[in-house]
Image (cartoon, rainbow, N blue to C red; front, side, top):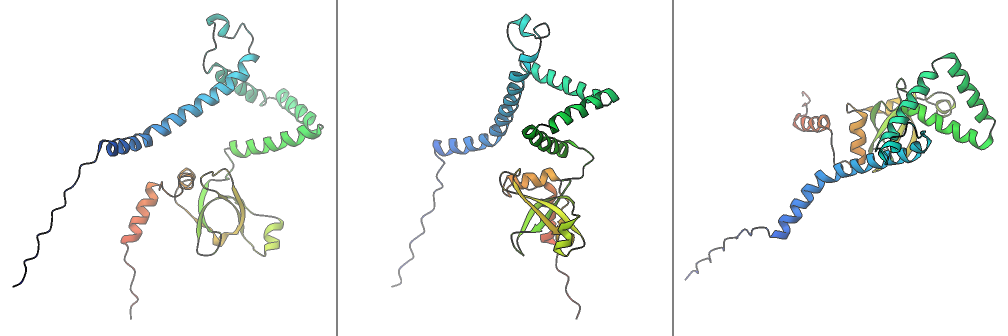
Amino acid sequence: MATKPKPRAKKIRRKPTFLQRFRTDFLTGLVIVAPVMLTIWVVMTVVNFVDARVLPLVPDFYNPATYFGRNLFGFGVVVFVLFTAFVGALTKGLFGRQIIRWGESLFDRTPIIRSIYNGVKQIVETILNQSNQSFQKACLVEYPRKGIWAVAFVSTDTFGEVPVKAGETEMVSVFLPTTPNPTSGFLLFVPKRDVLPLDMSVEDAAKLVISAGLVLPPEGGQAIQSAKTVKPIKNAS
């Protein structure tokens, strides 16, 4: 006689335990709370740093601590912003430009200070110069070998000795950031034909690098999804 197959036992879905629910809720909340707390911590650290160095230079008559008995949080930042704006307005005139030239000539005659001042000035001018087109476009370059693409930022067109020695007519200077710290990276001189521009902004590309590819810009996700749905064109035979 044929034996009847034993009925399969129904799988009972167990409810998550309290610790499992707590772990899920904690991780979900951490994604929301951590960026907010880190942002507040960075802002407060910067404000306290500026206050600690600017407030001692403020005369007692203008310092709120003289009247309230304690320093006002952020007052040093306000003084720093106003003083910086005043210096910027002063340099627009002939007298202010003469003072700046005199100060720079004084720094240029000091061996150690000259190197520090010129280096810091060049970095600040590169970052704050609004008319500079540096790092205004994200791109893809094949690095570290053919077939592997990396996100990079186009700096400027390359001129001078580099394209001549490389035997290329058109080259661009490309900054290749590292993950997760995009402030460090490599300077690459790439032929312009090997650079693939991206539609995403520099900010979105930086987020992509910092997150190690976990945060995709909306445009990038739509482009990837549309690329998957496009059917290849069949060759007519």
